[in-house]
Length: 493
Image (cartoon, rainbow, N blue to C red; front, side):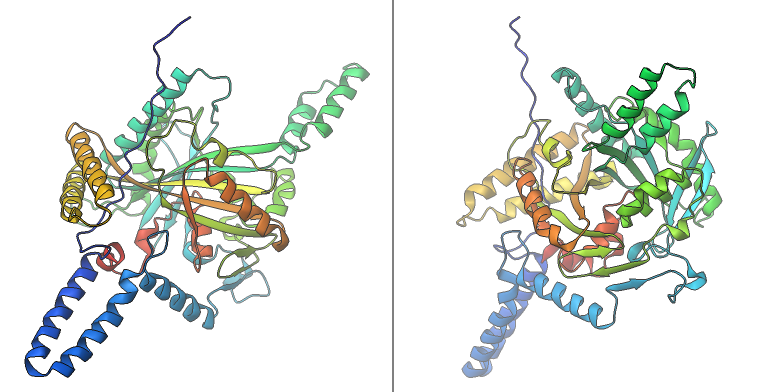
């Protein structure tokens, strides 16, 4: 039958820009203007001193003007390299835990940004147990949902469009959640050990069944998991400790009670997004997932010991070592990439299918979408400021055509926000984990191949592989809250 249906497209992602001259941000423009004023004043006293000042100004401005293909300035690259050298000289790239380490009580705590994290248990309004990951340095509490995503195979395109629409509505609704600071979606693919299938069949096999039937089931148990992959989807929602009426922040018990009342509403919103049956993860489930992420070879042992308790203090690696371009943790070798540019133009709903699907050259692959919803008041301020900044950059330069498109996109964003649309900042982290260092080049080539159909520009997180690896886990790490660089300099340079 003929139909007039047209598959919808998606796009108009805007990366906020700061006002400035050419490629300079706000801080770079201010430095240039102040330097020119100083040079002008020096010229009134001595021409030679003014010439020397102009040379100094040119040397200072040169690292701010030079940029790579990802838009990163030479000053940012030099700062990252210096920070890496400084941390490495102090041994910050090494981590040792366990009975023979200096870690108190001989436990295997998580390294880096998760070193002070704690796991708190509670029950939601339906009486279901759930775990909260608390990070004391930022006063953040994160609840993680384990979803049985339905997938798009053999599903009508209209149904997929409905899922995408409800997903957008769910993200927009997060802006009205009091105290919510971030959300993330983690899609992890890993080899299936067959433990769950084996336990399920053995638990439901009738001992009086015919020999042929039992033999057929036993063959299925040993043959089906070979070459198969398990796809796990987890949604993490992060809240900040809200102040009470008296001005003091809510304590741990109050936050557990507050978030427990909101869990049913969050799960209800996910039910129409294609996430399937979502349920909050317990402390045991979350500790097992993190333990396997840091030690992939322990997957079979942990899954076989289903009834054995695993504490949060033992979920970390025994040993880890961060290098400039990769991260070694127990039995895994990982590389993490970050998105430097979203897809240009318009894309279809299946643009990320290849990136999140299992790949035979990568033992474990984790794709994490990080979201930071803005409340309606800040959303209006952001789109209007971006609209002014794009018009300021429309100065007749050589990139005038792209600047004109930026103005059109910023106007459309402001118009859609005025009509009630939400504003959400997002990025993507991709982690590839293999079992030996020899497999790292192959995994890196595979990610480069997968990012092209997704129309993403990925940049390897040089000098911060350990932090990026932890941020890609569904544990609620909000990276901007852990940075030491002032926000003005970070956004404008």
